Length: 476
Figure 1: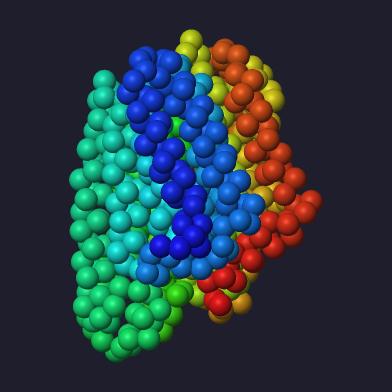
Figure 2 (figure 1 turned 90 degrees about the vertical axis):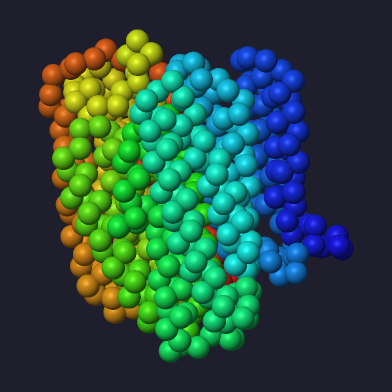
C-alpha cells in the first residue's frame, strides 16, 4: 500500500489506534480513575481527528481498491459526527457521575460506533457500507442497555437489538439483490450495469431503503425509537438522536446519488412516502406525550421526514439543503438534550414535561434558552430551525414536489402546538420544583449552542457555502 492510501483514511486509522489503546488503559485501571482517563484521552483523540479532517492534509480520492472514498461530502459529515461526539462525551462526564455510571466501556463503545459511522459516510461499495453499519450498530445495542440495573434501559436495549438485527437482515437482502442483478459491489459499476426495468433491482432497492429507514427511525420503521429514547441514559439518547442519523442520511444520499441515480423515479416515490408519513406521524404522535424524551423521539422522527425531503429532490440543491439541515439539527438537538440533563432536583433528572412548570420563575435564563430552542425546532423565524426547514422546502418546490412541500408545512404547523405547549407550561403554570445549580460546563455548552441557534440569521451564507461544497462533491 502506498502513502496516499493510508492518508485518505488517516482519521479512521488514528481513531482506531486510540480506541485500542484506551481499551487497555481502561482495563488496567480501576473505578472512577479508569473512566476519567479514558474519557479525557478520548476527547483529546477526537479533537486531533477533527484537526486532521479540517486541516486539509487528508487527500481526496479512493483507497482499499475503491472501497472507501474521501471527498468534501464525507469530510463534512465526519466533522459533524465528531463534533457531536465530543459534546456528548463532555456532557457525559457530568451526567454519568450524577447517575453513578462511570464505566470506561461507555466511552470505548461510543468511539467504536463513531469509527463505524466514519466508514459509513466514506463507503464506496456495498461491503464497506454494510461493515460500517454493523460496526456502528453493535456498540449502540450495548449502550442502550448499559444501565443494566434499570428495567427500562434493559428493555430498550433488547428491543433495539432485536429490531436492529431484523433491519440488518432486510438491508443485507436488498444489497445482495442489487449485487446479484448488477454484478458489482462498487457504486460506479452498479450505475453502469443497472437495468432500469429489472424487477429484481427494484425489489432490492425497496429492501435497501427499508433497512436504512430503520437506522434513521423513519415511519413505518420507527417503532423502536420512543422506547429506546426513554429507556436509555439521556446522553446516549442524545447520541442516538444525532450522530447515527447523520451517518445514515449521508450514506443514503451517497448510494442513491452516485450508485442509483438512474432509478430516481422509483426511489423518489418511496422516499416521498417515507418523508410524508414520518413528518405527519411524528408531529401527531408527539402531541399526547408527557415524557420529554418520548416527545423528542417523535420530534426526531418528524425531523427525519424533513431531512429525507432533501434527498428526495435528487439534485445538488436538495443535497445542499440536507447538509445544512443536518448541521442545524445537530445544534438544536444537542442543545435541547443538554438542557434536559442540566435540569435536576436532588440529583434526579427531569424527564416529565409537567416538571418544567414555572421554570421561568425558578430559572428564568434556562426558560429563555429552552424557549429559543423550542421555537427553533418549530421552525419559527428568524431562528436556525426556520432556515433548515426553509431550504428543504424551497428545494422541494423547485423540483416541483409540491405535495411534499405542502405536507412539510402542515406538519411544521402541527409540531408548533406541542413545542408551544411546553413554553406555556414553563411560563404560565405554578412552580413545582426548585432545581439544583447547573454545572458550569453544561451552561457553557447550552449557551454556546443556543447563540448559534439564535444568531444563525446574521450570516447563514457561511454554513450554506460549506453545505454547498459538501453537496457538490457527490455530483462530480
